Image 1: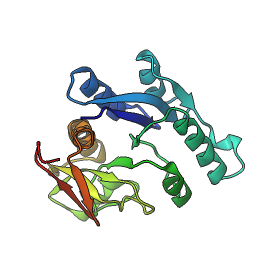
Image 2 (image 1 turned 120 degrees about the vertical axis):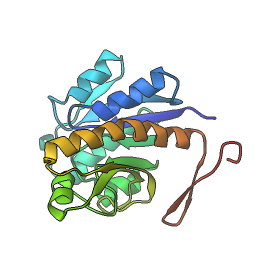
Image 3 (image 1 turned 120 degrees about the horizontal axis):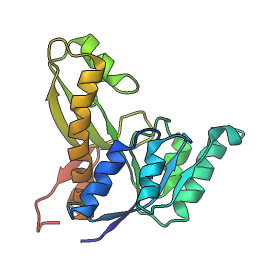
Image 4 (image 1 turned 135 degrees about the vertical axis):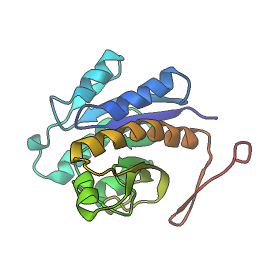
Length: 207
């Protein structure tokens, strides 16, 4: 079982990053976070990384002529750490086809809905407005679309009468903290096989 070498991109509080770090510390995840990058100077994710002695960088998109140059800078920094997976943990920028094609390693994302429902922004509001009884979160591979890549794992939560966006988001976030490290660990164990759009999770010992 190989130890995964991860680069994490985050824009905010970094709670999913923290769940990954906690899973590593408790031996639930066989991985190392080599570097953390953010497009927000004030992102708490950067401090979480620094507190753990992990290299952490703020990359300001305003310092670049266009989006592609910004993404080139991200990729250059990521590749300098020789990672084998890129983990999006609340990174609030849509990555272009250029980034996906040039990354050279699988990219994972977690989205706060049961994809393919409620893609893109404001997923919690979309779920409440539509009147669904259940929502949740989805760990998926990133392709060149927006939240359209092959689905690895999903976790379901009820949408309760009177839920606000904030209350639903909190309930879903708790599930995200469980399911994201689980999905990464399946990769570490070599138990994920992609067949077209379908992700097959093989049993332990069969990988």
